[in-house]
Image (tube, rainbow, N blue to C red):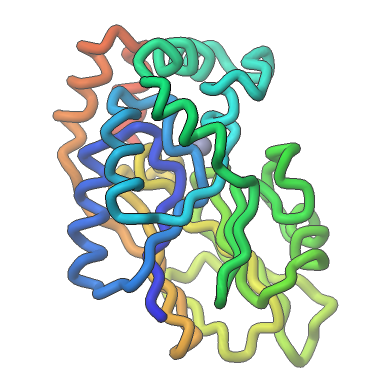
Length: 244
Ligand code: ZN
């Protein structure tokens, strides 16, 4: 099975379309999303509609939870809070119902999906080190789990011949054949923060036991214009050009 994995889309329709077009060429059978479908960007409804159309398996991110009133925006910075309020105003009842019904984790045939951590997904904690990854790696029921949340692509893994030591790699192609367990952050489709403004996504081939983190250019100008004309903070448009 070949999976296409979408991280942190954040209402960026041009980026999502570019990634889906690239994934069509990659020949994937199934789509997964690690959550944060909405928040920051100005096209949350179109992004939800596209994910529903392709039958993606989607888990709930902190912005998704905040936009349906399940998470206090007090913990969000000013820009994120403004975006949550704006998003709440434009979502239809059907969109909100769909977001609210998203699970916090999904365990599929070959991989699991979560937003921040696997062991306590409801806390939306950030995995920024091998130590942060340990409780999730300990709790995994399958050898591979895809996450997002930091918007920074990285693979944290334990090898079969040394299953107690956690290491990491920022390689774009990861061979999982020697891996015991792996927590893979697929980066962000709609708001990359690793100083590469191109949309990030991943392809996982379960038979070949391989993951590729890929990048694709999209029309940033168009999406930045959409953000500015929606009345969202202009800083949310500017950061897209920089990938921060
Ligand atoms: Zn996010």
